[in-house]
Image (cartoon, rainbow, N blue to C red; front, side, top):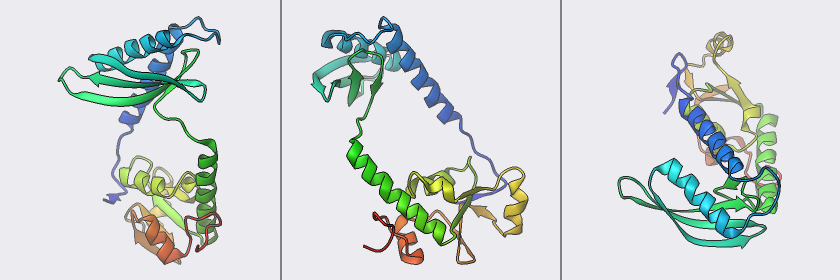
Length: 207
């Protein structure tokens, strides 16, 4: 849903997530000697259990642990204080200092980013602009849907830029400026493909 540009949101939840990530990294660091010495799988499992017990306050069970592409993959079951079970896979480096909930295939990620880059370049060539507010959830949804390089299309309507947006008749955000017309957003990738002629393909054009 579009937001009126004189309203503001909050990024408090993003700050909370960032703090949690820092705490998690620190906890793993203190469990090790600070060197790159390998720890055994049993120690990695114990570190993982200890960490998730602190985070959730519930019981943690390692269902499966195996080495995958040079890291330990832990399949864990977390029982919250309310009794709800959650299953999750996480990946722990062999020195026990870092973990992630996902591993990214580099070749696949390169392809995805190449497609998103070509799409953005095509939109830039069509002089598309996304007007919005960094604190507006709908604006963030619009940018995220257009890929990793969509901020190159973005114009923020906060602060001193507010007067510019008002002069351009931007009354709500996000608004998509294309072909001299302001279109209320957010809009889907399919909308951009059908109405602007830029496509989520390797060269940004019709397949």
